[in-house]
Structure formats: structure tokens, C-alpha cells
Length: 105
Image (tube, rainbow, N blue to C red; front, side):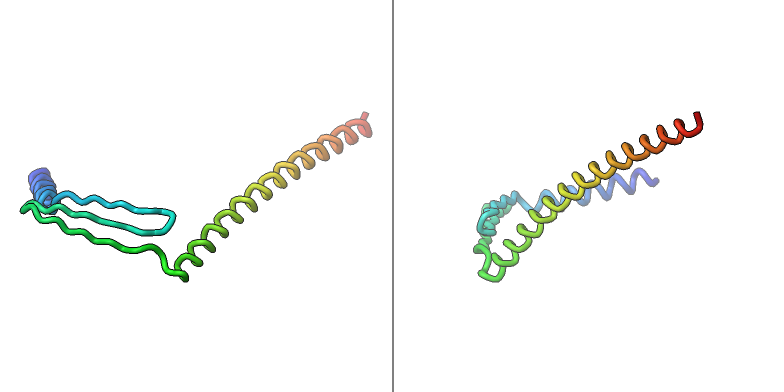
């Protein structure tokens, strides 16, 4: 019974999705402009266009990109520092171990 219900639900959703028609979206990442063209089953075409970002939107986008870049740079520096610290700790621990063995001997 459960399988029949699942199969019926899948068929229902696929039929609804098929009735929507073909949808094509073109986006320009540089300016943020977006054009969507929908071709319906009856042959009509619907075109939706959104222009690029406003000045405030462009500033927000630039800020986002700058923060992303700074985060990557900071992460790389932190990783490098952690590796150096790890190496120094290992070297120091090894020196302490050698000195302790010398005292015991």
C-alpha cells in the first residue's frame, strides 16, 4: 500500500512539473542582470528581465567579495602560523626529551 501511495505521489508531481513548460534562465554574474524565458505548452512565451544591481547593491556585493577575499587570506596566514607553531612545539618537546634522557643517564 505504501509503495502505491509513493508511486502515485511521484506521478502526480512529475505531471505537475511537466505542465509548467521549459524555463531558461540567463544570469550575468558581473552585473547581476537576470533574464528568464518560459515557453508554455500552448506556445506562448513569457520573458522576465531584471536589470543589474543598484549602486547600493553593487557596494554591498563588493563588500561581500572583499570580506570573502580577506577571510581566505587570514585563513591562509593562520594555517601557516599554526604549522610553524606545531613544528616549534615538536622540536622543543624533542629537545626536552633528549635533555631528560641525558640527566637520567
